Length: 84
Image (cartoon, rainbow, N blue to C red; front, top):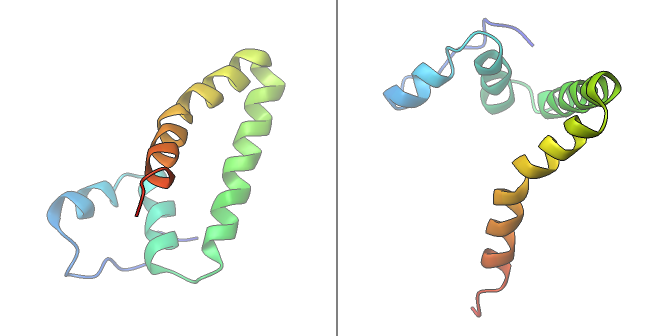
């Protein structure tokens, strides 16, 4: 992943500003506009960060990760239970 992946001019201004955040924006830019395999590198980075947090802080890191995923799980329950 690199910081030289160009941002297309059609991207709105708030998204352009978010993609210019130093580390997170660089990874997001490469996932969105870079090589198709960059998503796997990003997932490995997230898994490694989770494992390091778990090794460092233990159970609180696991609990905080689970709490941060609650809105996503709630959205999925509501989305999949709609009768369409």
